Image (cartoon, rainbow, N blue to C red; front, side, top):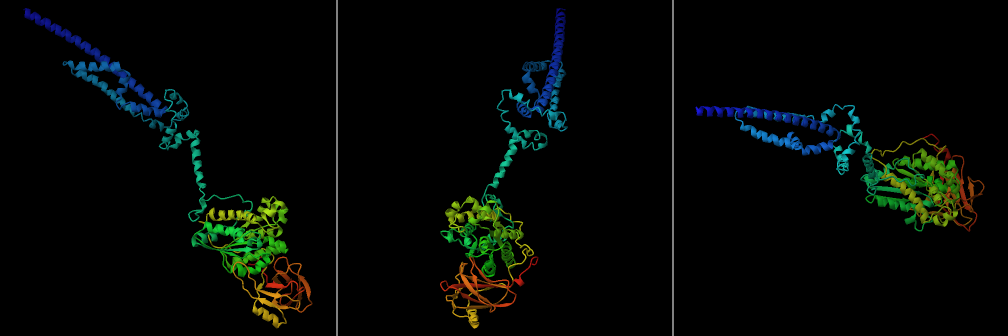
Amino acid sequence: MKRLISFATALFICLSLAACAKDTADEVNNENEVSENEIVNENEENKESDVEEGEKAPVEDEKDDEKQPEDGDTPVSSETPDEDITRDEEVEAEPEEPAEPEKPAEPEKPAEPEKPAEPEKPAEPEKPAEPEKPAEPEKPAEPEKPAEPETPAEPEKPAEPEKPAEPEKPAEPETPAEPETPAEPETPTEPETPAEPETPTEPETPEENPTMATMRTEFNEYNNYRKPLTHTYKKLTEDKELTVVYFGGSVTAGYGSSDPAKYSWRALIGKWLDEQFPEADIEHINRAVGESGTYLGTHRVQMDVIGPEPDLIFLEYSINDKYYGSTYEKAASQYETIVREVKKALPKTDIVTILVTDSGCFLTNKMGKLHTQAQAHEDIAQQYNIPTLHVGRLLSKVANYSNEEWKPKYAIDIVHLTDEGNKVYYDCIEEFMYNSLFCTDYSNLSDEPEALIPVVSETLFDGNRQHIQPKKDVLTASEEMGGCGISSNLNAYSGSSYSRGTFTLDSTDDLLVFKFNGTEIALWCNYYKEDRFLISIDDGEYFKKPGSSHAPAILAEDLEPGEHVIRIKIVDADKPLKIGSIFTRDESLATKKGEN
């Protein structure tokens, strides 16, 4: 009986304890469910706040992501350490309840909060960004609020806004961010610096890319570029050879320079070409003759210029046309004649016209104008698209339009230049040549010649022109018509200047007789204005005719077309007459305006 009572008592106690344990377990489970729900809610709130903060501060999200492992529970446990500890202890206690093993499975339900980890998908804020909420683009306009994150003792990180500028590369979707970031204009200024590659002036290697050179503009006021030097460039860079003729008067010859072969503008330009194109075989031909203008130039052009077949011609005659007394019309006609004959015979040859001056043109040059004969050349050159260089106007300005500064610094007289004066002319011409050869893109320019335009002047200075040099047959013909006493030196033309063969009359009894067809005749000789010829035309009476200050001296003009005979004597034996050439032409056969 006692055993029965003891057993009943023990059973009662066990049942009581089991009931108490069950109640306790139920309370614990309820508390766990409550705490777990709170944890889940906190996780969701934290993630939502993270998302919102991620939209406002993407950089801080990246830092938070680095701190948060993929498990969404750990960040919560770090925020509620006490609850996590009690949870662990309670979970360990639960397996001691063998009677109810299924209930501990209920705490596994809190494992379901891992599903809320799925809200990490919304952590892909880029998708909500895709809807491009219209109101939110204004929020990015509140980037100044990120100034608040600067307060979080991380001033250095905001100080690194330039680094986030690096993500601008991935942020190639410039559409969203860059329109708002233009507040950083300094970055676009950086691309302006690449303009500096224009400065790499490496023109000394023109074959590589002459267009890389920077164009010079110091003498732009004086240089008219017009037709590019296409043929010259091709000859220098492709054919590696060039022939240059310098055709003009004493200024081109270099009279006045200490050494014309070194310090004339002609010699300086020749040296420059040689230095700039060392691989090219360049021939420089000096065809400059003092005291000669375009009148003599027209008679010389065929033999002295076209004969050597140059690729480039420097043409300088304007100042001697002034001294020769040529009218605007004659200066224009004679200059145009030279240009057209070159273009017909050598259509690809480049021509550059040099317009010089003297101290008598200061007032004209100061007004930015040219003397009459130079203006005539300028007007024709413009019609034919020929470059002109106003070196004379430049020198007048450099000398301050003052005779005191002009001489002796820049010139030895009114026109002939010292080395320093030649250097001024050279500087202007060199800039033109540099810009023409190193700063011009010839890749799309043809070397084909331009079509020859119709004649601009009323008439050209052609018409069966004849250039007769002292030769034995001329002397023989003179003697057959009654000429006598003429001595001769029959040296031929050679080299860079004339070694003139001559007919010499050194007695008043000497007589030269010459027959020709045409309307005018002139002599290239040593007689000037103060000297006198005695002339008879077609058996007419003798009359005195002065020489000319500049060659040639016109003995007769405006004659009837046809055959004529002229007889020449001298007035004073004290000054022998030396004749270098005889020129004739027929005006009636000259090319007229509008013709080709």
